[in-house]
Every structure is written in C-alpha cells, then in structure tokens.
Length: 468
Ligand SMILES: *Cc1c(COP(=O)(O)O)cnc(C)c1O
Image (cartoon, rainbow, N blue to C red; front, side, top):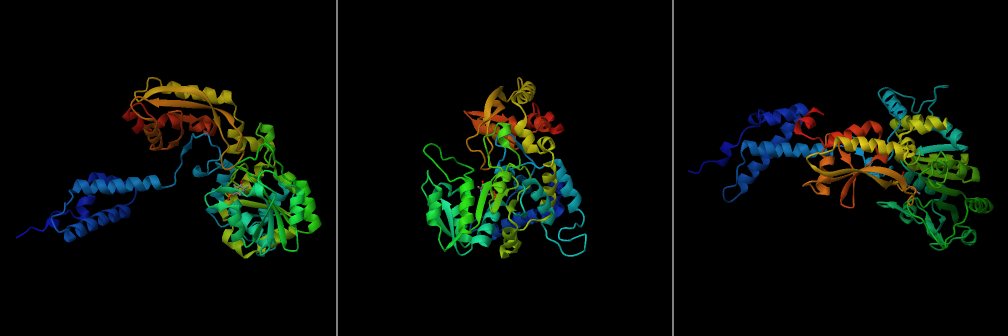
C-alpha cells in the first residue's frame, strides 16, 4: 500500500509555532500569517493529489520560508517613507512635493474629528466644499473665484467640458502636450467632449492663426504651458495678452493651463521664468489651471481660479463630484496656502522652497560629513563629494539645471545596481541615481534631518545595522 504523502504535511498550528512565523505574527498580524500558511498548504495538497508521479512535499522549514518570502515582498509593496536622493525635486514616483509641517498638523487635527467640510457655520446652511479655499486662493492670486479638484488633469478636463463642451477648442500645434502616461491633450479634449482645432505650426503660431480659426462653433481658446519641453530656436507663440484680447472680441473663454502654478516669482530664485498664477489672472484669463503639488509645494490637487461665472459653471458640472477633493486635501492645501501670506515664511516652511534655496556650500559641508563616516568602509571602493546638477522634475523647468552636490559611491565587489538595491532595501529606503557607473546621492533633494538616514542605509557592520 502506498503511504499518503500528505500525512507528513504539518498542520497550521504546528507551523505557527515556528519561531520565524511567530516573529511575523508579532510584526504583521496573526490573521495575515494564518491566511498565507493556509494558502501554501492548500497549494501543496492540490499539487500532490493531482500529480501523476509523487510530487515533492515541502518540509516545514520550506513552507515557513515561502510564507516569510511572501510577507517580505508585501512589506516592500506598501507605500512608505523613502529618502529622495535622486536630485529630482518634484519626483512624481516619490509623491512630488513633501508637505509643510503645518499642513501635516492640520491634516492630523482635522481628520481625526468631524469638520465643517460642507457646512456654513455662520448660518447653518449647507456650504460649498471649496468656499474656505476660495477665499484664500482669491486673496493670493487676485482672482474673482476659485475651486479645487483632484489634480490638474481633472481641472483641465472639467474646465474644457464645462466651458466648451460639444464645441471646438482652438490650440496651438506647439502646445499639444503629453504630460506623461496616458495624459495627452488631444485625447483629454475628446474625453471632455470637445473638438480639437489645431492652429499654427509646431514652432510658430501667431494670434492671426487663432483669429482665422474662430467661428460660430468656437467654444474656447486654450493655452497650455509646455511644462516639460521647450520649443527653442526659430519659434513664436501668441502672447497671453493678445489671446485674452481675441477671446474678448470673440466672446469665448480663454483657458490658461499653466501647469506648475508658481505663487512666487521663481526667477528671483535663479530659476528661469515659470508662468505665475497672478500674472495669468491679471492678464485676464477666464480661468487659470495649475497643480497643487508642483511648484506650489502642497498636496496633490488641481486648482482653478478665474472669473466668477466660469467657476460657477465648472462647479456645477456633473463630473465635479467625481473629481472632488477630500477633507485631508482641504486641510493640507489650506495650511500650505496660509504660509504664502508671508513670502519669507513660505521660503522657510515649505520644504520644496527650502530645498530649492539651500545653497551649494551648505550641501558640500553636509556631503563632506557623510563621506567621512564612510571612510574605509569595507563595502566601498570610493566615496567622494562631487558637483552635480539636480532638476526640477514633475514636468517643470525642463531645461533648468540646478547646481548641486552629491556623494558618489563605487562598490568594492558590488556593482552600481547592487549598491542602488542595497540602499533601496534599507529600513528607511534611500533612492539615489546611477550616473557614469557611480551611485549618486544628490543632496539637493535631501532634507538635513535625513542625512543620518543616508549613513544608516549603509552601515559598517551587522550590529550597526541592527541598532538603527
Ligand atoms: C503637470 C501638468 C498637468 C497635469 O497635472 P497633474 O496635477 O499632474 O494632473 C497638466 N497640464 C500641464 C501644463 C502640466 O504641467
């Protein structure tokens, strides 16, 4: 008689007594571990009963390893804090702008309790979700009215649909942008229910091109800031002023998608000239659209400021509900915007602006201290302070190189990719960049309190790593 191979399979309880799984129960949860153990056992039973020849019945240790491996993988898939040492300030993959402390405090305070999200406290009536934000947005930008949605992609779609749905929208061929992923302007236009009317050429579009295209079917003029590319050389675009003028003459709205939405003059920070929200409003755009988590340095959202009537139409659009913001975004945006009431306060308290204006001498000093701690490190062939160039990222200031300092590492036996993987697997993962066969930790994007985490990500000994 053939012995049933499943007789040797350990039970769930036996496996749970294994010290390695006991540890995981403590770290994660009892039910999560039990569920994984059951899944492994079911798979084994299924394989053994359906296999023609004898299938391998795993040992308890093998089962434990499988479960532990799955749980480790799940841990790394969780969203968690990382140190951004890539030198890309608005790294979309790393969540763009880190929020100011005031914003985080406001989120924590407001989200643990009930909040006046849609309540008018003065008369007890149902209020608008964005009324409070509208007041400060108007104060900071000079606009008549404002509303906020989930992101700038949603803002564009909503503005197009509400102001020009079913009609033609005139856009320069030099501004038919792709922002990334599936966001391409011609397709967004279709989804919003508008018909794209391209004018001009890739490098030259004049106000006359727009004027000639205007007709009875024109729903809006759209200007899009080419955030992530530049048309350089023999080129020309119609000015905002002339577009506003034409829109007035033809009695159609002008939608100005400026992308990153600077509330301050970034040119003063030596950062080229990004379109400023205030300028677009002052020039007379019907609505101006921008992101909350690019140069503004706040939470992910799309902000629409402009004329009262147009904002009302947008707020009433049926899609508004699908792209509305939650109370956490309301809290974070409000606290971030309040910091802009005082420019010097904004510069200090908004992490993005602080990182931007930290000077190279400061970065060099910090890099030197980090390199000292890695001198004669057994895993490293070299650790040096190097000059480098950081970038804005997030589709802003594409040609702007920001002078920066990095720590450049090469491994003794580790390749740069292995070194990069080692930093990513630290308790608090560090993300750097590979350049010229070296692993770079660019300090432009590292907050000073995080310097220690860079050092701890590559400890000298096992015990050093355990103690951190
Ligand atoms: C970034 C950008 C968008 C998309 O904004 P999200 O907030 O990422 O949705 C749209 N238009 C322009 C010009 C942009 O730069």
